[in-house]
Each structure stands twice: as C-alpha cells, then as structure tokens.
Length: 259
Length: 165
Image (cartoon, rainbow over all chains, first blue to last red):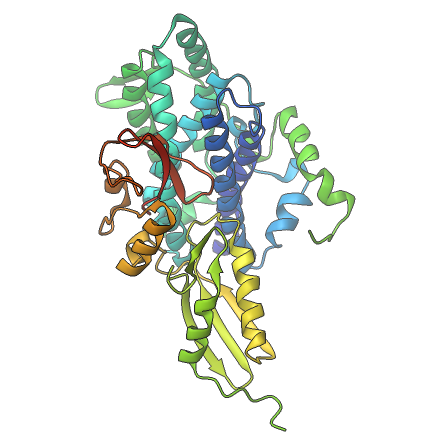
C-alpha cells in the first residue's frame, strides 16, 4: 500500500462510518419520541451524510470513484465502517448513547485531523469540527438528562451503555495503512484516540448516574470491555447487509437517474 | 458579430451575482453570505469559486445551479463553478448589513466568536421580535442545518437563531 492508497483507505473508513450512521439516524425521521428530537436527528443525519459525501469527494480527487458510486453501487462487503454504526436503531436510549459515543470520538479525531499535514483533510476537518460540536452538545445533554431521570430511563440507558461500549471501541480499530499516516502527521494513532475518548466519556457517564467501565491503573486509562473489531477489515454484521440493500434499492433500480 | 467574447469585468459579474439569493434565507444574496469566494473572467469563460456554509448543506447544489444560470444569462458560454473548503466559511464573515437583514427576516444573527465558535454556542440569544434577552434554547437543531430554535419568555414567541460556526 502506498501513501495515496493509505489516505484513501482512511478516508473511506471515515466516510463509511458517517454514511451508515447518517442512514440509521434518518430512520428516526417521522418516528422519534418528540418532535424536537425528530428535527434534531433528521438534522444530524443530514450532517453526517453530508460529511460522508465531502470525505468521499477527497477520495475521488485522489483517483477514486465518485461519491454516489461509492455510496450506492458498492456491496456491503466492501464497506469499512465499524459495527457501532451498523446496529439497528434499537430503542431511544441506544440511539442517544450510540450517537453520544460517536460524537465524542468525532470531537477527538477531528481535533487532530484539523492539524493534518494533508491539506484537503485539514481543511475539511476544520470545517466539520464546529458542526459536530452541536451534535455533542445535544447528545451529551440527553445522556445527562436520561441517565438518572426515572428508574426506567436509567435502566434503559445503562443497558444501552453496556451494549454500545464495546461496539464504540471498534471506532478505534486500526485502519489498514494507518501507521504510514501517523508517521507523516496526516492522521492520529487510533490507540491514542481511544485513550482520550475513554477519558472524555467516562466522567459524563458517571455524572449522569451511569456505571462506567473505565478505570485508571497506575496512570493508564483502560476499560474492562472487549472491543468489537472487524469493521475496518470488512468483516460485518448481517445488519449492514440489510441496511445497504435498503439504502441502495432506489439508486440501483434506475442507475444514473436524475432527480 | 463578436461571438465568443463577453465584455464583462470580474467586478460586474460579482455585482450581478448579488441577484442570486440563498434559497433557505431569501433576504441574503450569496455575495452577502460570503459564499462566493472568487470570480475570474477569461474571454467567454468564467470561473467562480464558492464555499458551503455547512459541509452537508443540501442547498449547495441549488445555489450552484442558480449561479450557473445567472452566468449564462450574462452571456458566458462556458461557466465553471467549483466548491472549495479552503479557509472554511464561518459566521464571523457576515458583515453588519447581512446581520441586520437576518434580524429583519426574523432570525437572530449568529454571535461573533473570533475563531472559537464553541464559545458562542451558549451565548444569550436576543429575541428578534421584542429584543428581550429572556430567552431559552429549545433545540440546537431547526428547520435547516444552519438554524437553532429558541423561545422568548417575554413575548412568548418561538424564534430561530443562526448557528455560530
């Protein structure tokens, strides 16, 4: 793998996470428990899908296929998203916890990427970073409110944390070719991102009345949870296949149609 | 006949683009919004560089095709409109005139943040209707990607605020 291929692989992982999560978020449009949340998640979905498209445009500028082809004509087995974003939308608690975990990871990753030595990545990360802050403001607030609101909300939020935590660690599964990009200050080391993420989410969970699996031993921050890996290696859940077939249905029905 | 030659300067093209408005905020032109970054005329061709407000703004393609249509109206045979993320768009680029147009339209202008938009996320929003500061954020998301929803406790009206970016 040469440097350009490593950058393309990295861009695809970013774009696939955003596109698939955006699609999952859009499943709440018209179905969210409150109209305000319906609006919020429809906006978040639109942002994430827009970000995916923007990352894919950089991918294309490096000699790759165009964003629509990558999004709508690629088989599920070729995606490189983590399992967190593939999972069905679940109940509202799972949706909130998943999005909070993702937004926290975005804040940390983009915080590095906006200093990337590769100009197009640096410019786009700087653009997206403040947009993602609004997502985090919203989802963190929801975690804090629902974590200890009622017995039921607490029970469901804790169940969601327990379920999503290992999947979220999959956001930090090493992306093939990443070492090359770390050496050249193009992208950050995934392991380092994970440590910062653990340090960020744990206090939020605790002050929301939720149990955090994160602990610090001799200055090392770790979690007891086994990471759910495989996404970056194109090993996926059956849920991704279902989602992709649903997402691509119309596009594949009339290829090249103009709307 | 002088086919293939359009006698229009860069400045005149920019002036003409003041007629093209933001489809989501029709009181502001793409020039007011600082979405148009650069205009270059080269014989019968014209190159325009634009930058999106939000990376995922769905109106960007409508804006692009509105610009192309305007440029063709001016007589250009070949028009090139490119997107750029260089020097990302921020709400601090909106000048006082644009801000006052927004407020008249009923949207509270974005708070100035001098490079740190997160600092403006919690700033007090002044009600565009009664100018009260007694307002509450209802939702950091709204009818378009660039707006948030607030409620004015003084005049009991909901209103929107342009998100600081």
